[in-house]
Image 1 (cartoon, rainbow, N blue to C red):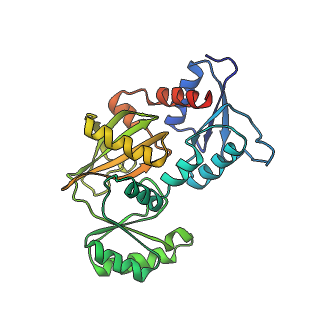
Image 2 (cartoon, helix red, strand yellow):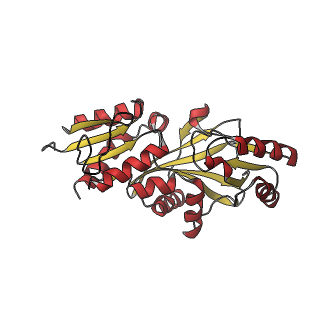
Image 3 (spheres, rainbow, N blue to C red):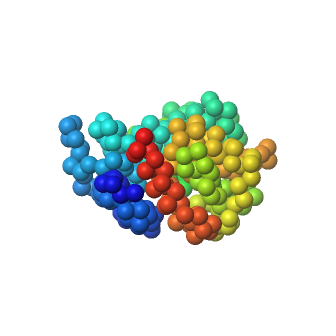
Amino acid sequence: MSDGFRFGVFYTIVRPEEKALLAAAASRGLEVVRLDDAEVTFGLEGPDLLADVVVDRSVSHTRSVYAAWCFAHYGIPVVNAPEVTELAGDKIRASLRLAERGVPTPKTVIALSPEAALRAIERIGYPAVLKPAIGSWGRLMAKVSSPEEAEQILEHKSALPSPVHSVFYVQEFVPKPGRDLRVFVVGDRAIAGMYRRSSAWRTNAARGATTEPLPLTPELTELALRAAAAMGGGVLAVDLMESPGGLVVHEVNPTPEFKALGATTGADIAGAIVEYAIEVGRR
């Protein structure tokens, strides 16, 4: 399969996921090109290193988006495409797109000032969840149960230096049964899923949630594929919750970790990503 095909991995640190991707690419005889996001530069005429396809694994949303646009400028296919990473990595834009495509999501209101955010929380009802528009691993999320809590948290967020914290993403608190669901989509296939269980309201695996295999029913698969397609498709982790009214999609991750999912299900996720990236690079 090698025939000189250059498989690029754009990364921040080599975590278990990146090690698995590098091993999967090497096992297929591909020429692996490592692209450290702290080292590579992007001239208008071309990058320092060339590849036939690049898999984006940077932990920085900002670096991911700008690097992906640069690779696209050079005509190098990226997994995920810059439009996909930019859209899915922004919770506000992603929620708008999911709503446009009729994908069920938690009730959400966006506000542009602390005063409007208080009214948004009242509109949603207590308890509500405040999330940063851009972020992962459940960081800087807050569950607010009273106007007093809301005022304190909004004051704190308003004082943070990043402009993204001056925009407020308010979502209903979904009384899920101590777990959420993650479905990993590669191209047009849902390849694996898991439950993430926790006694805490945040059920991220990165925050210590326990995991177990999730059977991919036709309903779940169809909803996950619709959510991924709404973002533009690619390699995406679709996170869902079991609300009193049925399944809702609350997030779509464009550069997802998959160590816990692979260990839980035994699925060869790295292999599926590499095969998909090869297909993208040869189009």
